Length: 490
Image (tube, rainbow, N blue to C red; front, top):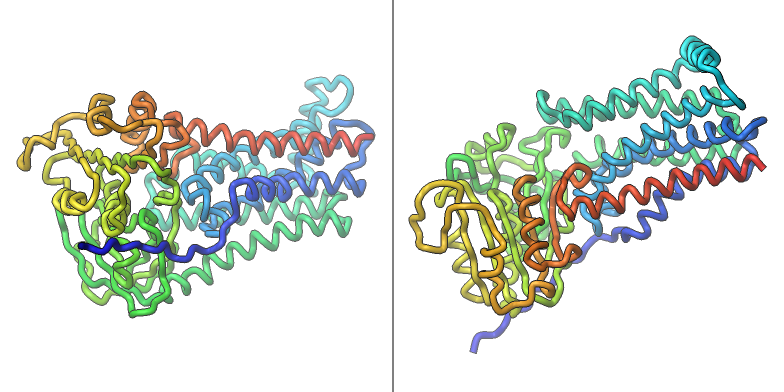
């Protein structure tokens, strides 16, 4: 009789819950404005100037919080996922820009019946006043920074150059805004009010120091080096890293890490899903698609090359699964984290039904098909392999075409879709298609788990649901700022 092996999950670092993150964000962004209302730092003859000052304080706080939401801190993203954290970061940038616009517009349109001439006169005065120079510069640069980031996101520039330029511009925006606040806001002169902003500034500065000074040291502390690197297909390579025993690195199946090749600064790192399982440590295996950046150099890496590993990151893990059937939908290199989870399930001899839909360009691009089928022998497992082109060389289970509700119905025959958890990973267009098919197949929205970095831009129902929650949090900031102005105007 074969003894069943039970795999224990590695110890996870502490992380804040979604609820705690919401409360903390509201306190950090709207809290200074509420404090200003309490200490009298926003007094003005009429309501609109008070609201303008509250919006300015909140805009500054929101800009400073951007450094914390973009720093890849596990305490922030550990439970909700780094992909959702970055999605919120991008959406919050737009909200900060709207808060800046409100700050400016409310000062321009203050008064009982402001005429166009008076508004233009005020605008000219603000633009030419030496005391307003840093505020005008900060607002203008913030518009450029956020519009460029949302529209291009690094297109046309090498990723490290884009990342450094974006970070440097963000620091300049925040520094100019802080100077404007110190010079022009009476709120900043109060010890309590100024202390609130000073705390946020210190956290932002600490975030920068950690990202650019501490993290480069931490990434190489595990001692990972290239054990092997080989090309599997024309576009996919396998990279295996090894570290000394007792390295202390741990992860959950399905997570990813940011890799820095060679003794470079971690500003050059790139994220890749881990295709191995925790039991393989101190070895890490990655399946890497050539995306035209450093990933194309992977097959040529010499054994012994040092590699910085920042991680683990991500909530695309079996911790998100229920007790019912598991359905994995993977496209292209999205099979890497799925392979990790299925291998974990196989080693654990998990009794839940496991189903897989894997898509690739050609049959040859299903680089781990044989490995998956072998792992499935220990599971209640069935798989469907789809291709965009080419003839199937391995049997009838490989079909040409995209995933349909018919495919899902066939794989889930005899199982209850409403009890299943679906994991989806792959190119953005594929994930949007998969989300629609899964919902049409009866998989509940809250049981569809995705790993993607554009929750602020995706058009599927999963992204829309996440975006609605993000928007609700940001709307609460605006509501609290308005409430602070009402309190101060009494």
